[in-house]
Figure (cartoon, each protein chain N blue to C red):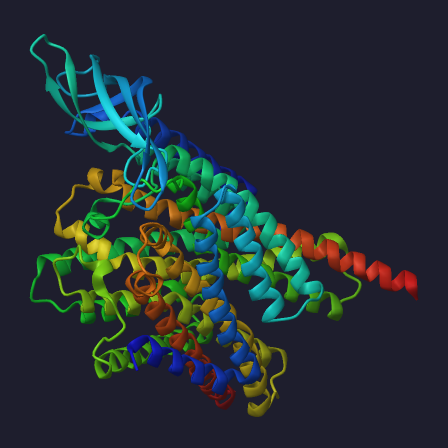
Length: 258
Length: 375
């Protein structure tokens, strides 16, 4: 068995052992996520549809897997789903604006060995690809904040049915702020770990500060970190507002039915 | 301390925001006028025209368009400052390794003077600092406006961590005999202590989370190391790191170590705050109840946190996957070449996350029991 296979078996065993059925489900979700990414790549290969729209569809698919499959379809997950899609759309437009001007798309000097021998004129807009990369690297964290807020608000309203709209929204913001730091940390460290090789490369080449900041790969990574942070922050008010709206509407419905 | 004062006194909050806005404006002025600080010549594009268009079809019927543009630009620094320069640029509509330049772009160039005194040259790179700064300010304002105190904290801890990482890497590069894994272990300890103290302050909750995070990350690294050793790295393709002139495997392991840290910390702090919260709300809660509720919370976060890691790692491979597949490289080979490192990272991180759940459960309960015994 190769290393990836063995690591997968270990992860599966641990998830099943610690998490029981829910653990198995989480593992299956991971496989489905991989499938969704590969599917997205295939759609991007041959299409006349705008790649940003494909990215958005991919985000919808990924959100369905991680919200509706791991949990189930209910108030909480629907609220989280809507909030995720709205945030992703806003972020997508912002990131596209950034990538259009900053010219961080495509491949950079450290990849020249790898891409040599391949045709680079393949008729795919790499500016949109980099937008897609940035948004997809953050979507996990965005969904996590969304579901945490909507499920906490759901519990909160059940425990304190007298809360009004404003109070519920405010609690959503507070809960969101509490997880902002840890989720941002999760994603920032993951990026650091992934960039470690690059950072050492830059240090080895003794690039000056100016050269590093202006290089395609480093400025691209910094902008990815910033956009990820913006996404994680932006989902907080959006998710709080949508959860409040949906939960309140359902509460009114159930009281008027009685 | 400062932050608490900000919360209570609107006046100091006003001062704080004024400082932020002033430094924002100053940094914009700086970044738009820092050309003289660079040694290499910089030119500003004033006008471009396309002089040639060509449709290309490669061996696999991929259609693309290639353009040649003439650029008129003004030199911004150095001995030719203020003079007009004429450049040529070739780009494709894909832009995989090239790009169209537009009015307003700043470019680093190598200036060549022709015999009749006209300036021309080669484009070396794009000056991207202003875009980094603009995005950085959008990030700062979003985090401050929405996240308030917590937003500020996470930015400060990000900043400290970046400086720390840079310092340690400097040391590593300058000392060839140093071992990157030990240095990473040191970094992991420092990152953990700094980040968790920022998140929750000096208290038992934070101590429990720190102990858990360290045990969790170290055991996940240990498992991955053992797995890589007994399978002798089969299935892991280090080609994606081939630009490095250093041992790939060590750098990969170090990256994996640091990469899973955030996720493990996330689980550790979530678990320990929930368990302490349960205890604070009901001091008579039994160990069994703590275990059950803690495990339930752990199960809830396990899946989503592993997904965060998965997407953070895997998305970066998208451009390379597309390039390979469009060039007719077989699917299996494309996946192994471009995803094996990322998937191994995600799996190792996932193992760390799941292991951390029982570890944090028992550590937090130990701290709670100790607190109980002291009362």
